[in-house]
Length: 125
Image (tube, one colour):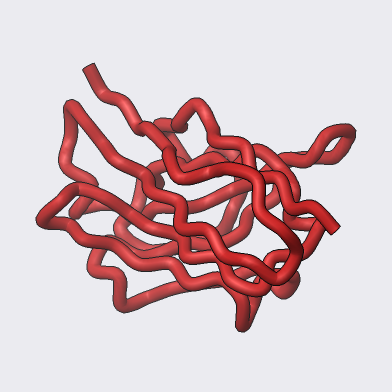
């Protein structure tokens, strides 16, 4: 059974850091780009970051550039999102998803096939 599982969310004060993990079971991540998304209450889901299958190609939303870093360890079948200098507006449920492609092609919902269940990140002011 193909499954993506996020972990690492929690409650943190503004300015703090968290590292999210996205682990896969039932398939190997190393052939696919992986995206991180988030959805805050009352808002649409937005793409946050993406890493190509090799990890050499990355992309970030303007709102997180310079603060978030995506990385992957294909040997562990895991993708990470290091989040630093967190702000209250980063509060959301964070999801990872695997792309149909090996490269980052954007954040359209049809470009991703498998999704995790999400992990809550809450940043207090």
